[in-house]
Image (cartoon, rainbow, N blue to C red; front, top):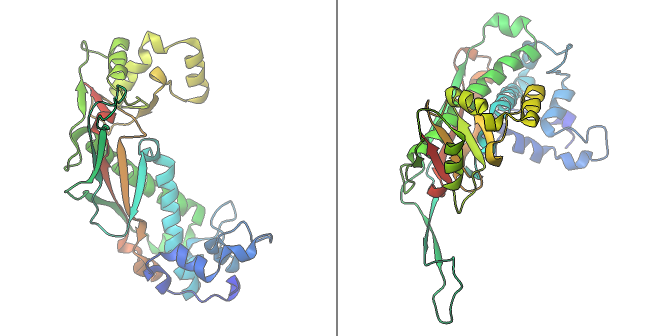
Length: 331
């Protein structure tokens, strides 16, 4: 079926695979390969079909989505994509999560690993092999919903353009990303409520952070690797003031690009999700599992009907600690 005679309705959102996948199934991008439409996905082809321009100086007003019932069906997906852009721009989670698991419901159990035997020495004849057990946790991962209510006046829809509306939606996404990071940090520090245990504490030698404290923290990670440091504003200021981290090359890079130094090879991330006076350190390849249920969800009925006074935009996500030894807290 060609994209320009596809019949759009609310049922595309009700399908189990979601709006985008349903639209792709009805209008596969494969059939446009090698054509001017080949670089567009099924949703973008529908925007082109109805002449809706969502970005740039010549972007349309929000009301362009509501010229008829079919174009109104495209509006919730526009909202979801704009919010997703905000989440992705502000999202630290891809830099600290070892894996992301997509689930279709709210009941999910992660895994726990236990090791026995001594793997550090050669195995003698007839000796048992060291064993690593991978078991399912008995407790469910706590899934938390975060989101906002989208409220837009008639004037906002009637007179303002979509590129400006997108900026507001991206900020909603940024707030959701911030809340998700707070959840992730809480699980890393305090455990996931299942077999996950609180993070091991490494004590500072004095009242402030020293380079010796960082060396102690780095040395505590064996057999894991300290790949990432998350620090609040007060600790970040102390770190950047350390003489050992103020060499010329690091200073030029920081002042020229804004990229932070990498103490002992670890990526440094500033976030006030970590409690003041402490630094969260982890091996990003072994510490955290992110569990998502459905991605960005919009209240499509209200959005399509232009009842924007109470249209919900939500995201349901949970976190589980994989290896307790891959997380340390310097405090």
